[in-house]
Amino acid sequence: MYNIDFNNPVHAHFIGIGGISMSGFAMLLHSMGFHITGSDREKSEITENLETLGIDIKYEQIADNINDDIDVVIYTAAIHPDNPEYAECIRRGIPMLERAELVGQVMTNYSTAIAVAGTHGKTTTTSMISELLIAAGSDPTISVGGILPSIGGNIRIGSSKNFITEACEYTNSFLKFHPTIGIILNIEEDHMDFFKDINDIRASFRKFAALIPDNGTLIISSDIPDHEEITEGLSCNILTFGMEHAADYTPGDISYDDMGCAEFDVFLGEKKRGRFHINVPGVHNVSNALASVALSDTLGISDDALRQAFDEFRGANRRFEYKGKLNGFTIIDDYAHHPTEIRATLKAAAKVSHRDLWVAFQPHTYSRTKAFLHDFADALSAADHIMLTDIYAAREPDPGDISSVDIAKLLEAAGKDVTYFNSFDSLKKFILKNLVNDDLLITMGAGNIVNIGDELLGK
Image 1 (cartoon, rainbow, N blue to C red):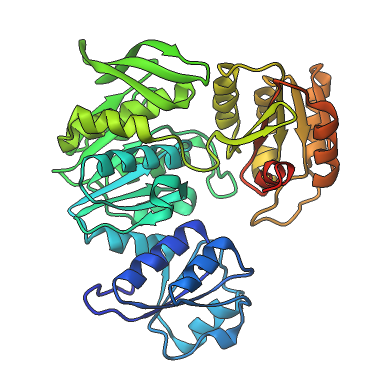
Image 2: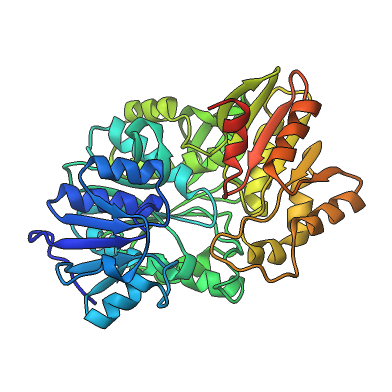
């Protein structure tokens, strides 16, 4: 594997530079003096921002974009050997690094490298603890898988030895990381186009936990079934947090305001650690906050900084994000694309004052929809009205044996009010005709369903 010498900046080319993570690391290397170029399939706000930095981006991925001036090429797991740029790099013998390998090498530059893993909640928790380290004045470098308003994007380049990033299990990417502190929020079935089963996923998380050095710390949820299997035999420091099972850090006396945001006690063992309030809704964010408290104690951060972080963190973009009001109804957008995430989002919505709850859901990938078909229907049934759009294919071809109509049929059989739409235009017309004052609309999914709220509001 090619090893980057960060003290000797070279020409690095990013295939797929417009991705949320790729763009962040392109900016990071650019700030270190590297000559950065890249390519992507289409122009976006992210790529336009990179271009303002002087980064040259091509909007067609062709072999001519690759030349011998390039010292190393960075690519994502979504780029395959038949990609023209990838193939040309092989032909020319240009060194290549998969994105996760780059992230792992970047982490070795930091004495405190925090990696946040889990099937759900990575972006929110990474954002929450980013606010914590900023409030503590520790000037961290941050890579988050979403847009964090307080840093004006998905990357923050600090000058300290503190680094924070998400750690995704898909294709075992996080096994290329070098964390000194690891956080595991949950472990569930997902990405079944890659993993064989839940045991395969658990084995991957076990290997991730084993990456943490003896003088490092693993912070893990005790609500993960048999979480001891993940931690057994590890020599690093281990801290647990849990909502339902015994743990080092647990909550008590939880109450919610009109927006579903919680105030709660935190117990360290049997002793009350303190009372805290967060400004993001849902009980799942209480769990994320517990992980943040455990990290705060690990790093010796003051409670003043912790409370400031909780007060200032209002969520990352697309995580129960308030978009605005239209004709008296409220529009929220959420990235939930797994049944567990849908349940958490709708549970949070139930604590927000509203009349009827409407969900416009766009399933993400055919393989996930097929694997969790019945679970999707069950999770969505918590809404009063469900609107379904076509599946967002992402990286997958259409296999022809699964569609959103299959979810609709299950919901209809359960007596739920569900409507399928084959276009966004028809969905928007339906929303404008049927939603009334004090209704709550959640646009939900990991694809381009976010555009619905923006277009309705004229953004």
